[in-house]
Image (cartoon, rainbow, N blue to C red):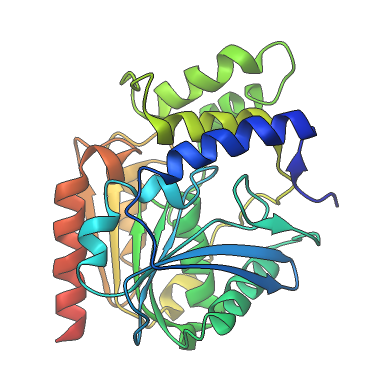
Length: 291
């Protein structure tokens, strides 16, 4: 199995420029860490002073830490936050060994938390990051204080065929140039993305310049969902193209301690388009968990 990499040094340079612009949209981090794991180096940014049971933010595909720009100030007001770039994705993390499946995905994330001296964390995952957070809770529940899953993919319902087809087009030479922006507009249910949006530009540049080599995440079994014993908040976008949101909401209720909420008017871009409401809901959930 191959290792994810940039397509050329020129592609890497173009991506780095976009990354710096995207990162500049965030509040200045109080710490920056490059953590060595068995699968690569993990870039983590800390916001606030270190403390017990911090929040750890896991982005969607190609999102990097920069995608949390609409959410980070509110979430960091509660306490320490770490925002990670994912191994095997475009960003400042660097993959050095193949990731073959769910066990490997849990292993690198658990190793990163250990190196950050985080014994337990409140995990917040968006899209693929939601699957990644749930995967760690299934395989290493002792590392997880709570889960916030924001329209997580392949977690409570499978990918639809239309998503697989459109995603594949973004990798086809001669087609991907128009397929990438079309794919991003489709995810946002037709909404136009501002041309000067640095985070949207960063995601597009990551899709253009980086060749991923990650396996498709495996859906969780019913028994695995029932085995989750941490408090969970799942926000499912009613207009999401990533899954059948109503089916996902119903299936999520297999988790014993879950608040599964269907937001009918939201698209898969829920974390940004409904940032204030999402932030308020997450903070209320954490307050409930604390009590």
